[in-house]
Length: 263
Image 1: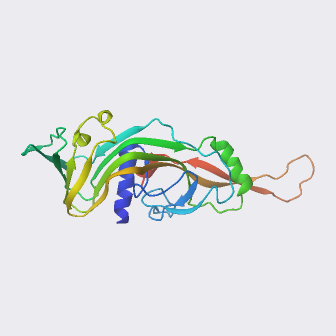
Image 2 (image 1 turned 180 degrees about the vertical axis):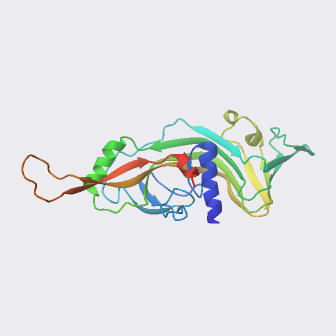
Image 3 (image 1 turned 90 degrees about the vertical axis):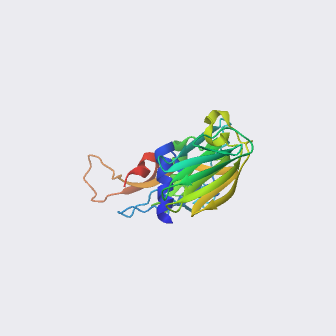
């Protein structure tokens, strides 16, 4: 199961350039501090892949910041894994392969021919994010200098879809039967909205499914906490005291989606 979580995260990073929330819709807030139990690399350092676990939050450790609001500039996203997904649609009693004409009473069968294959549809996604990260870094160093931040991440933004349908096949051969206004699957993304009606009637094979649902958190932006140690020994023309003074500082390093694709 963890390998499919990793594959889901990498697919989102590759196709959309985003860091995925897994499971889609899992509750996470801006300001949460989280870890990724399944994201360990060969060298033991974690990457933001798969499911996450909450550790604490900025509010709980006393770091104050301005609460962000949604931008009210929504975008929509759609993709399906290449060459391993096919669509059959029943349109007025006829099966038309890979031709999904808009019809409120249509039925579509989505066939997955590879383990891990995905279909992703997220409509009217809005984002809220923390601003002024330089100021935030300073506040963290003043307030929480002694905390251990290794392998933890700060959530600096979340993206929430007004409606989303997300499917990942857990087996090499699976199918989903969908009923409703199927222009959501075939039409240009800008022509569809969250008012469309879709529902999954049945499935065969082993699939992970986030049914056509409201208010699904799909992406997040992350910052990695890194500790830097400085040699702050006082230097002058006077004779040396033979005493070194070290100062630690927490640095905030934004995580790029492309980092998730490097093994």
